[in-house]
Length: 255
Image: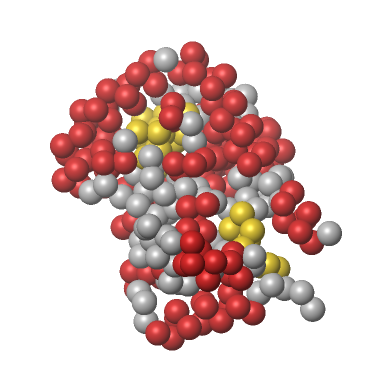
């Protein structure tokens, strides 16, 4: 028997709810390490996730890695594949919602949790009443209703402190909503500079307050110039589909 498994999160991520609630308790770290050693092929969607996993769970030094240190991890690295996530079905699923009339609508499509910083989104909504701001998880939406909101929105916003992939921002891009994300976590490697704002703007509430006007200025520019940026959103969505939401590398490894 050969075991293939996909990793999405765990206690080794200090910003994930498992990391916050359980932390580095020996039982959970031993369990996760045992899973990893028992699995023949461990799949991760992004390099950011792989590096965090290796540093926090496997003990790889975070900086100034020596040749000997890297060699010591070679046996582990062979078990790791940066595969993306198997979601080839998503563009077809969202196709009926792709050409809906757009509104001046900005979505918060993430779960409501401390690491998602919904309070930043709500404060921006208060300061920018000219736009419609919706926290999706507060609406008790059906899947079709959620997809309709995605299709009608001009922007999906993230101030996340935890993200090993980010499916909702990808979904937004697929239906031509501008993904506006911080330059940190998995977002850094997934998105072009056009759609990333400096990480320090939302690294904490205090940092957000300091940089709030900069966020407002960029959001306003994107909303005012939405049509001019559609071709870039489409290109971004196409690259995300190919590089991060495909099972190609996973299937190649199985074959």
